[in-house]
Length: 450
Image (cartoon, rainbow, N blue to C red; front, side, top):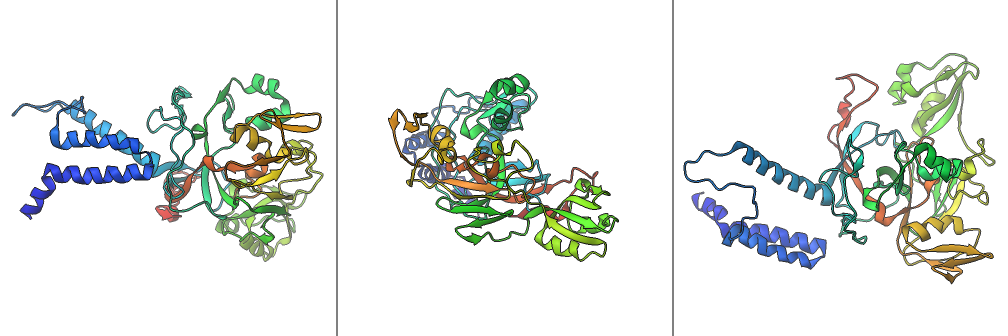
């Protein structure tokens, strides 16, 4: 045992272990300029010529230790370790809305795995540690754009598959209204015009890809797939989507005039705080139910009928053509009846027409940084007339499991591959905001793996 202690405590052994770990990280990173860091590691453990931790005090024998400097050293080490883990392995995330009910509940605290799909190299590396995009209270950017890196992703353990729950940067999050930061700027512009939107909710804040707000949805179509939504149900490549347990829809539930027992709804995990009984129906105009719940509700003695809410064209609201992707009256689409829609794939070429241009306009201009112009019924990309376009990235189509209460790809289109952050790995805490402590703790969800 003493011999093992001597080996572990040997400075050459410590250097070897740290150097091997560092070398593995450099190979994973794929940037071999970082091999220069081995010189620093060698000096830290072997030669000790440079005092790299300049804040640390060297004590003489018998000298009393400075508690504040010791705490500073521990804090700096913790910040470096936490930043490294957050950047390459796991990031904490909280579910703010009900768009993924019941797969992910409002108030779920997650650890998101970045290593599964491969962590993104930050495009804006000069940033305060552990703060995503804005300093709390001050509401000013936590980063500067003096240095910008092109998109690159390290190797991961797998690729995004249809059915995966994915955390990604909000595609429309490049422009944020300072007075309404959680609302979609582009939707407001389409509804109210740019000048009025800025006047009401400005000034505007622009953000790079890695500093956009993060969203979480389920991937329903991957690059190369053809997607269609028929009466609220998703079909991909001619096959109906597998019905995941957490997926739910909005239903009209007609009763004999009496209300459904709230305890029955709560047992079915229907959020009773969102349930409103309409005596004029009589019944409920919007009851969010899974497929399994529908059969249970139909079996209740006071229920007369259960009908899924289904938006058909022309829509009930005059603003729908500018709310549903691709925001063109040429497409008679609603949230429940959409497509067929082909999901762009890296290297694939599509014929461009004035009719299908709205589908790919944002990809061409914003995500892949080209200049697009239409003149005399001709399409020009970077000043050259063209009738086709070859995609530079893969794209995905995302939808929330709460299909009638989710802002997703039906409202803002495709998600580029450089926006993918990771996938939920574990729920470490879950709190119900509608209940008081300790009843607000969802004990069954604590430390549950995804």
